Amino acid sequence: MKTILIVDDKLNTLRLLTDYLSENGFRTVTAPNGREALYVARHEKPDLVLLDIMMPEMDGMEFMRHFRKERQTPVIMLTARVDETDKVVGLELGADDYVTKPFGMAELVARIRAVLRRAAEPVETEKILRAADVTLDKGTHVVRVGNQKIDLTPSEFDLLTVLMNAPGQVFTRAQLLERLKGDLFENVERTMDVHVRNLRAKLEPDPANPRYILTVFGVGYRFTDEETVGD
Image (cartoon, rainbow, N blue to C red; front, side, top):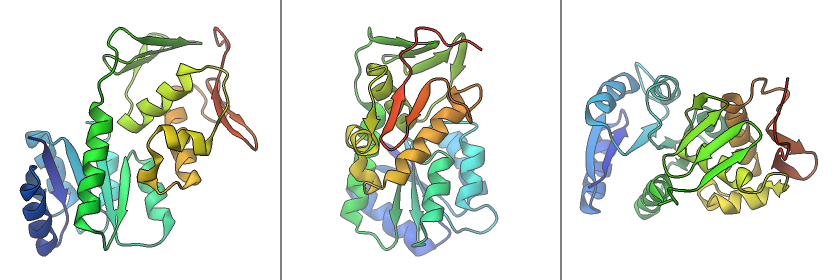
């Protein structure tokens, strides 16, 4: 049984989500703010976090800044704001998906299951991708640049896998969204730019001048097809 951590300062929301998710086969734990959520996450080790943005003491964005230093557990943001800025900032901090309030409970459960499925999809344990100085092990979900291990979120790992499966091939944003089950992100192309920027920040020695994930202006992105990348 998968454990979902629900983080929201509204008691009625916590009760509603707890009841509905329990009826749909999930174990739930709760926290009323980001500070308590960090404590609960360390002890309960949830499989996924449902995270409200606007909360007292520590809001959702600050929680993400701390949480991503400790764990790569999938996070779905719950945001009441229509402004796209909240969504983009959340994705930049490592969230895997977002749901705008008010939302349908059936849709939320579908998104939870989709994110969990993507995070746990079986892979060929013997398949190792190598391109330039980057190695990606699909079996262990370990990525290295040279000898340095890089920690990626499930979405970042999936994006890198797509790009490294075909070094030199140019992918449009729409193609990447489709490969990454982009319907979860409402097919917002700016979302893909955020994920690429996050991935570059972890992978590239100088994200402003990328060596590995290259922009093809007016088209999309490709992974370098050079055998090695030097200084």
